Amino acid sequence: MEDDEGPEYGKADFVLLDQVTMEDFMKNLQLRFEKGRIYTYIGEVLVSVNPYQPLPLYGPEAIAKYQGRELYERPPHLYAVANAAYKAMKQRARDTCIVISGESGAGKTEASKHMMQYIAAVTNPSQRAEVQRVKDVLLKSTCVLEAFGNARTNRNHNSSRFGKYMDINFDFKGDPIGGHIHSYLLEKSRVLKQHVGERNFHAFYQLLRGSTDQELSALHLERNPALYNFTRQGAGLSMGPHNALDSDEGSYRAVTDAMRLIGFSAEEVESVHRILAAILHLGNIEFVETEHNGQQKGGLAVVEESLVAHVAELTATPQDLVLRSLLARTVASGGRELIEKGHSVAEASYARDAFAKAVYQRLFEWVVDKINSIMAAKDRDPRRDGKDTVIGVLDIYGFEVLSINSFEQFCINYCNEKLQQLFIQLVLKQEQEEYEREGIAWQSVEYFNNAAIVELVERPHRGILAVLDEACSTAGPITDHIFLQTLDTHHRHHPHYTSRQLCPTDKTMEFGRDFRIKHYAGDVTYSADGFIDKNRDSLFQDIKRLLYNSADPTLRAMWPDGQQDITEVTKRPLTAGTLFKNSMVALVENLASKCL
Ligand code: ADP
Ligand code: MG
Image (cartoon, rainbow, N blue to C red; front, side, top):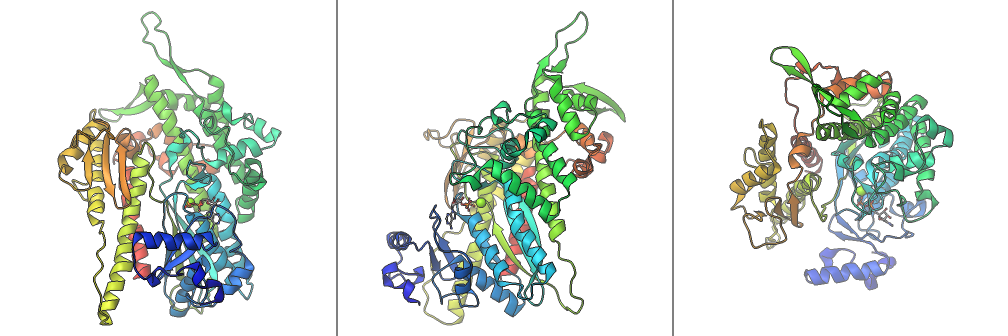
């Protein structure tokens, strides 16, 4: 060990602790932290403490210190982990992966960026243009993804509101030749509403604060975010606490430049801006019931028609159709006859919100797909036999407990249970097996296995997601309340599940609304309010058709499913919860295949 890791810095590896108690663990962590040592190993696992201030730990000099070294040759560092993954990949021609976990604000995304920077810095000694291009896109795409997928929360000014798994493909020389980003469950409810002290996605404020006056007037926007329902809550909040680089104005230019540099066309960037503007206008649309006049039944109208005109212009769709898709929906009655069914104020508001959320989600997914199409590995060397090797980096939302926890937190925390399962399987089991193999006296370590919690969520038929899907597919007025009652019936004896109904004396839960899961990382009380809606995640086919028929090719490309006619839409689409579960199962399988 180097002299810059002397005994005064505590133990650089928790494995070296004389006795493993929580107290000793924390003491060692604190001692190291106070001396600027934010990283500590537990064997091959790196523990990181967020310093919340710039430390002189990164950059070319530091990278050079770690390049080509063994894991324990230098003080614990992200670079050492990235280096180990890279070496394993290169020497053994095996896929590897790096999993980053931790609660929101712990420093996961920053860590992933440092590791990407390390990999970019140590590869491509031959400076091949294609390799350089791939590295540029890998590094530059981050700020674009963050503009559309990150937001200020009370935990983190730049919190990722989506999960990210990134594969980097390497050729036989160990140079990056491509990459692929997989995104998971964007928290799209944020488009509509944010908690006090939080903001909508950065992109909206960047557009309002960074556009020129001409650009704004072409979008029919004014500069002040307080004028729009979707951005009012966060209007007084800045993007970050640090400096001008964190400003929405500066970021707008940086993001727009990065998009152009990566390979988005000027037309595409303009389309993106128009789509963001359309969402802001949508958010201001309100509905009124029109007077009964004589014999005629009262109808529904929008308060401000000009907003509908703006949405129509910005989405390149006919104004009368935009209006119609907000005020009514087409339903197939009996055979193939189509009738128009007018909305109530509540239904119209629901349709408007679903419209706004869906447009934003498709936009985000399109941005990710676009980056992927640019990064896709090409120009493969024909002399190469065998496949490319891959390093995967997972930066996914950490365990989250808010004052009110909804469907999104439920999904996020389920994801963390899945990763914990993987972690248990990989690290703990592997170590025990190794000790047994080598015949070392080994006291089996008791660890908490969270399999029962994963089962509680994902088990077929009775698991929470299955019960929720059942509630969503039942015709008639199934309420969140009934969903909760069904959960209570199925899980009343489950050690990790409770609710006020089952535990009437526990006043921290509300009757008929809350249930609690004892997660491995702590207890979380969820409000069942809105679970059914968020899981069903329905959008009227009229709106999909409207956008599919847009004259804007970029927007149109985001809505291939709008091609279908209402009478052709027979299959019930998979619910948000089931889609998420499927993506988590696939993710864990993929990670396990790279680690085992
Ligand atoms: P997470 O992705 O885990 O939610 P982030 O990676 O976004 O958290 O980190 C939150 C904030 O903490 C960052 O915006 C930054 O201000 C600070 N931070 C994180 N890691 C570091 C680091 N290594 N050095 C200095 N500040 C950091
Ligand atoms: Mg993050």
